[in-house]
Length: 312
Image 1 (cartoon, rainbow, N blue to C red):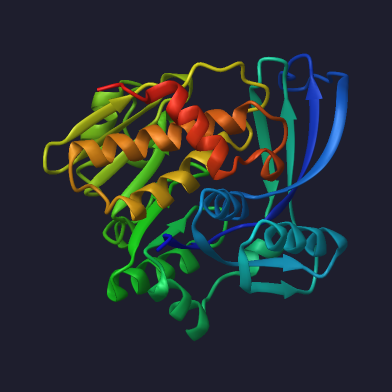
Image 2: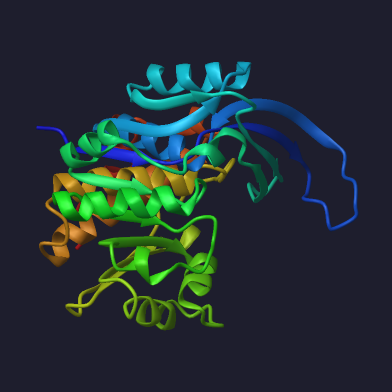
């Protein structure tokens, strides 16, 4: 049976401009291309999980505008169950994104309808209880994130939190997290340490949560848990085009791989899950856009096989 993943999170319409370089504060840079793409960390990770082979349910909110209609259709077209997606009066969330020729980006998010997701209902709890993994981020109100995590813990669903955007987190939430997924900047903020050393970051985070996945961009990813297991995997070597949704592709695929392989049963299963997630992130970075760039399972498998098959 396929993994079942529930996502409680954001949906935004991404307004994306490409440019030769990113502007400095107060500077105007002429752009090259403009496009609009359905996105948002929650919706992106739901689509990533569905394309990676999971049965995926999405709980969130969009506005009663054209953007909301488009984002709902994008989720449905990707095979995501949207019975938990509310439509509320007002604008949908939007993200302003600039991408340079080195595939680096900056992002500014206006939450819109996402900010109304302050409380979940009985149907949402049933969705979470039926899932193998609950996937959370920090682009919707913290009250809903904590509520969802609490229900998941009570009902035996694994809680994976992607702590993005970066924020210091209350103990009330951290105590409910089974797996924390962060990049180096997010790790430093959550752990409240001034370091970019992965080992230092992992040690600090393990004081807060039992398992940590640290994404390292083109260097791959690392894992550590309180049982003493440490794993580091390299990323596939690619020519990156746009890294906007690569982290979401990684996290969505990680949730699927984690569920399919039974979590952290051994170093081998953790290594396979991390490698597969890295392949998903790299496959995404080879294409422009957010949700439109998220890879399907055959694309992930192909890059996984080309990079890691036969590796120890």
